[in-house]
Length: 453
Image (cartoon, rainbow, N blue to C red; front, side, top):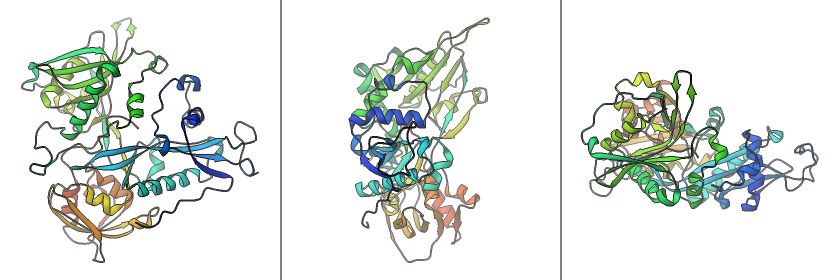
């Protein structure tokens, strides 16, 4: 890896690593970037999810007359005008393996300081920090889809959302009738370990079948299934303040069990309305996890038949989630898709060698990368199906050419290289290379993060 180069901020601004004492300023800046009716005083009652040593602010410099004021006042050295942070995902699932990945988050620029390249410089610093830490991939949720593509992030995972009518007919699954479902007030003290453990297990083996890692080498995990690895993320996940619920109840949890063993859960907030025709309630599902098909059928059977409700509103579901197949009339649930994770490859060699491939592969990729020139050039990628891969620089003629954004789009296995080629975003130089690489890069389990970071 070449020596680190950190982009320079425009005149009048400086970087500084933030600390817990800066939390109020961060929240105030976030409210400038993402307008909210919630006050900073209310937000201060919530636990911070941030890992502070990975949280970097941009401060305005009082000595530079070109720097615009904040709130009409002369800027001081205490004026925080931009910020970004990242979550340390030490075991982030990629196809067939895990890698250290940076979850870019809390990216904000004060509206009075836009169009001064602060965002561009922060992203450049984030890339440099990631490469220095050995994180070959960065992932994020994009508030605005048009922003991050220009920095080389590709839309790598999609989620399904439904409006499921109460009492929707579901297909039967053998063994589902042996499961029981209990419903309780959700609390970290009672359910924290259960939820964390089931969430990890569901991402590692989402089909409920197949051999564990280390036996036959096949590990059909769910790529992108980020876990809440830090104490700060765990604390933030379990916070359930009344001012954020609006007209819904406090958080409840449904736990599906088989012979007393937990096999899945769903966290929900019900919403109750009474209309002239009678009760019309909604079941808002924050997260639903099941270890196998029978547990999923038992859990969804209860979720879709709660009293005084008329619709069930899940989100953060994979495109291959069980409910899409269990619904007898999926059209009635108004299925719709939206983007989920965006992925940016920062060290092409390490990232390509760090995942597994669904088929044998021997291909030379020519990559272009405007932000990280170390990625630009030809890479020879060799792999046997579901076995460790090898990737190194080469002078050989390329089989495929693509930009780093398209590599990020295909990296988790949910978008095929062939589909990108149909849009003119991947170029084939050797006949057959596109089909072979598209098959190998694809993954049998759809990528997804079940929570937004």
